[in-house]
Image (tube, rainbow, N blue to C red; front, side):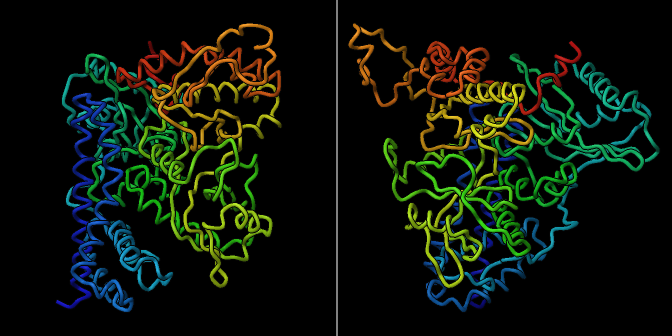
Length: 574
């Protein structure tokens, strides 16, 4: 076998091992749900995140050791790429295998190039109409029992072990919810069918049944959450039909899902039909294939740059002391580069900032923390940068950039969805919108606390608001586990001198927090402060935080689901 063919075969063996392990831990989510082993579910989510990098390191070491010529002779890599392409002809995950090849090639060659002929810059294998040994989705029909009979067949097809609270009651509720949504009982056309993905989507304490109903010329995507009660009995909790409610389930502000997929492209295509406005890069990321998500995002970004003319500029909002943040107005994302130095009172370093971002990646984000894509050595067209932004990057992050010809190379950066900073939103909002945003802000703090997260820096500028009015946290340099902090009351002043002193008259530890200071510290506007105290006065009491810490230490996992409480059947139908 030729050298190029040998290298290609070894890289593909590394990928196949990765996907076998990835699929094993994802498929086991069904068993963890059936046993209600929520601690194991959280641990599996954290463990799976590292699978890809572990397998890439193994493949790099193997190729470097067995084929030392590959590390110094770049001209062999076009031949390796061609040999690898031929191995993917009947592969079930070719797009992910191509990304794995790119990761290995970049590390073996130590990123000494930006030449597309060495890697899969564009996909070489089409995944359209790609299927596996078993159908990726199943179809169900009206067998004479109407909509309820078809729904019963759908639910039972997943063969979930365990008792149901009352499946017939839940099916009746599904029918009622359908009737309410469409303004009357469901009428099936002759071609009516329900199509559902062959695997449930598992996340935290829920399993999500994802499908679409086809009736005549119309198609209706839907999601049905399946939960367990304290006795372990299962029940259908809601029916999600609107794009906004379905989109919340597939939000990257939450933990990634566990899904058993032989052909991931088929699952992504199905979900994309449910949410046609959601980029496929986000869907790949949601099902745990973050590297493939990054690959697609990068391709989308480069395509956008090719077809746009506006310039990168400093992102709107209060400048941070840890990150230099810029954006492209026509592209709904922000780019964050860690500064070379941090002005007082920031007491962090680069390693700690990167560690905080990794903490967020591993943790359940409960819909309140923005997901981030981490990239190294990204080449941007230099002439697309505003002079003001370029000057700022050279001033505060010069070690992270270099100029090569007509390109600006950013050595390390994070990319996140662009949100409206909460402080800017409140400056322009009317009383009703202000009240809603402050309610959301307090809810975000509370939900993060229930997940054992304390944001650290609660300033409004560190939170953003989505187009749907949801408040999300996005500044992670001071984030930490709630249980690592000490929440205290401010001791009473001993005398008049204490009260007038500019310095505290009591000792303050590095992790001490005084919630009584929140309103004054967070809100300069008295009206906003009053609204916060009215809606979230409990956040000023150390007892709230101590109780939340106690629940976290007992291992209690709060039920924070990605759909409105009023959609739950127990609320709608009693």
